[in-house]
Image: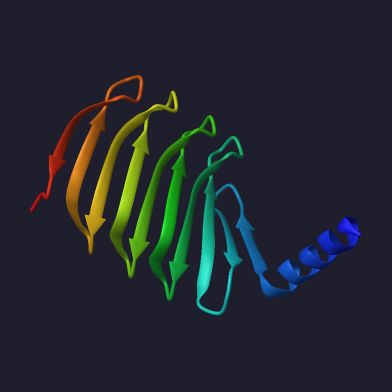
Length: 129
């Protein structure tokens, strides 16, 4: 029964999202349509690993945007609303340890936390103008 449920889920997922691949050496981008006005754009490093995945709505960043180092480790995760940073942005070192976390409100940084090489918090700055 679980195989039937999985098959049904895959069928509906394929019906409601479309993928347009323009993945070439010159233009390594894959666009996945999530709904009528929402899409996920993915770019790739030369080695084939994902370089970035960003959500767009009406041609503006809206949702999350993730960047990856060439080795596949997460480099940053930033939340957007209507083309501006809104929410939390987290940046990482190539080792995977957290580097910095910034909280945004409508494109303006409100709080910044810094971390050492091990990912431990060392400093914070609040309500920046």
